[in-house]
Image (cartoon, rainbow, N blue to C red; front, top):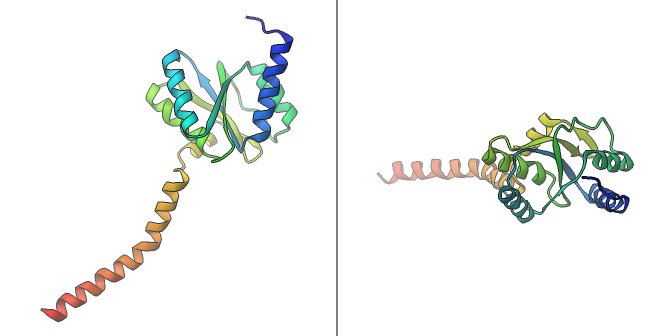
Length: 164
């Protein structure tokens, strides 16, 4: 279906605004996605602070060219959407990756923009597997706590041998 020039300029403005404010952008390929699944996806992404927008590839490419990211735009086959966030840089890729596992092939990462440069599908998948910041903080605290916990256990064993 044809889109009017006014509607195209409105979509282009929205994409340009999204790309200028985003800390990370994921390109999402979707096929055979039901309305119910799309609604659930949008809800889960919104809860994680990720915005999601479906647009024509030509308009996405035009907005990306205007923004001037470095590198080459990854291949965008099929139907394409854009997911981005202002907060956590791994959230868009992780949200799409996790929800794509639930849908078994109806949703996939096609690439994205990370740190001001285009990245391919493999790089975005690697970014998607990075745990969220609270989990990383917990892992760091555990690393700091481990030697102390081992020392306390050793002292307790010494105490047990002295009192026995």
